[in-house]
Length: 606
Image 1 (cartoon, rainbow, N blue to C red):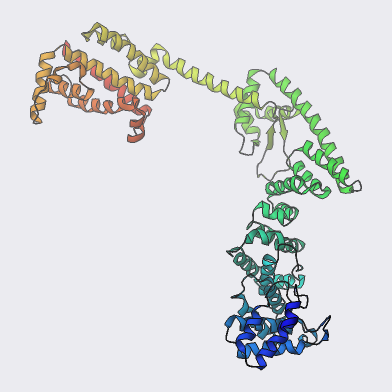
Image 2 (cartoon, one colour):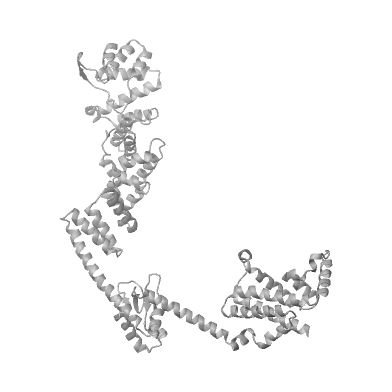
């Protein structure tokens, strides 16, 4: 036997010499050498234990009994757990392959074979043969999900040089699908496979298994499950599985047409031209209004399959729609030219109607709305609306589900830019009108008290230069109020208040410095040389000294401090950090503070 083994270069005898030599050692109770020879027999994807062999120059030899004797002996007397487990696997494979016996085996016998295979997985976790045999046994035990699970593992771990296993028996997938929560369990099994740490499990599953499962679910028209499975993988994996069309079709059927279009486009780009795909994508493009692209795709579909009657009919329909669209476009353009010649009053009415459109660009219009916008009599309103539709300013939408007692319209898209400009002009006119009315001298006097008498109070300002600055800033502030530029008004009013107080205290320098010294002493501080420079005092100090000198009332003092906060709005960080409200109310209050300040100081100076 040693000579047989040494002469069997390349193991063409499928290790028959090894098997007989193992039996010899076992009969001599030489277990150690029996296991040593057995270890030379690989548990590989290509090895199938023989039943009988014929070889030259040794003649015909029946070794089935030797084979079983070797396995039983190793299982019963072996000392190596690995040898014992491998012997159990070989015996399980032998039992599984003995078809005449297998058909008569009980569930209990199948369960023993299953357990032998399961025990081998721990020692050979990537042996594709073991997974394949185990899948077959579990199929006969009607353990459908686990049968699929181990079949998928056999495909993942099979030799990269070629495929030795066919696709999963369709009977298994059918049985899983019909069983309660069967697909849910199958998806859980697939997740378990994808979590395997060895190899590129996801890529191998996609290449070897995913396409069959997606194709099966597609045949069942269970498109939601197709998408649920596909979402576990990348587009590259879907491409590997040759399932791009099925996934795109599933997205369309479940209502996600945007994603469906993406997959159809990817199919034409990455897989190749297909009449069916081009036709399906053309229909989606047509629904989206992309008629020219639909036309191109349908022509492609017909080029690929001249007998495609469906694509031919679709192309004729799209051509008709393109023709009508071109006619509609010409009508729209004519309407836009006509719109430009309409009186401003009519343009304004149409623009106001346009401004009431919904988020879907629909305009809900009835007689009452036309009467309100155009100032027409009720009997004339319907006539005017019909005239707008007849002139193609609006399209009437009839296939809608809106509960509304009137007409549902959509504006001519070519006149939309004109209407937007019309609305902008109307808004500008309204703004100019408001500002103009606000700038009338009688309005400035009535609303803000800006009049010659008010400006006359500037005579009490001692510095001619400051008086000119104040006159300028007062004008700018009242203009800001009139144009609703409230932030500018608030900042200007703070500057004006500071200028008024600075002028008054500079005219009484010594008294002002003494007043500051009293204030500092009350706070436990001493007057420093820098404190004598009144020109550098901030508004807070100016207010404190003015109150100490009784130049202003206590109420005006507190209002002045409020104005000081507003002046800091010139720094964006202050506005952001302190959340100071910029409003008409605050701007009016600030304006009233400087009016009162001028009045009180003017009275004091007289």
